[in-house]
Image (tube, rainbow, N blue to C red; front, side, top):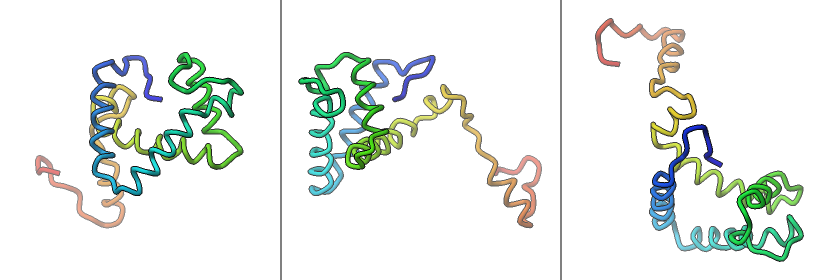
Length: 131
């Protein structure tokens, strides 16, 4: 899901797992139960998606990718929602890091909102003034 030309590195993925664990540990008991139930669905998804008697973690990388892609595009809304929920949380956590955004081509500078404010009549920032 996060693959790009430069990575992510194994170390970055290890940190990501710790960040995800920390994120979930602050969730309510009900939310944690729901996420664990959805994780069980992902674990046994190969039975339904690939028609293979295997769990997600026993599959090779290519088959795991195929399961995730098929779940995300599934006509059965439950499978698609499970993937959407996890992808949303993963993306929020993973892309909080500027180096990951930069590796994908996003610059750290975001000034588009300042141009829009000028269009709405706000004065332009003075030269050399902090923005």
